[in-house]
Length: 113
Length: 112
Image (cartoon, rainbow over all chains, first blue to last red):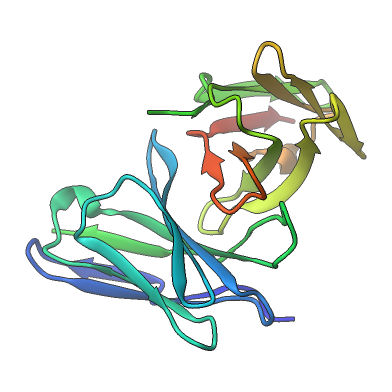
């Protein structure tokens, strides 16, 4: 079974631009979560999608948005990029059973200049 | 509001000795706890978990202890190996785990 795939692996953008990150979950997984990792802050929860519906949301501004498609693939969009958005963005998928563990992709490293 | 706290940013241990990584949480609704390990340039991978109905779970060299009254859990690695050098994240969830909250991580160095 293929793992969680995130593209692109690296991105460099400038302030004010917008960016779209992509995530393909493990086959059969319908839940996709997004996290932001910055030094000292650990993994900050952005949002979680299940069957194309956002089920949970973290404390991030509205510039951060996401969506999930019928094939469970998910995209995350950040508009009007700020320097502080530079981070590793991780996507994770999980199965449907209660408390199933998360399987993470390798992440997209975003640098905002 | 950090609901899951890992107060030690780093820990250094000699090979063969015990590594103890600590984690505190504030939300009494959390009922499932997990540890993940992360190497550079890779995503976190699941290590071990524990349900709130237990106080200990063991898997090979890894043991997680849960103290619900103190809202504290710890991960013990015995014996520690150089390959265990990584960042360890504590995580917690409630009500089925649809939103998993992570701590800031502890970087473990195991010296040969």
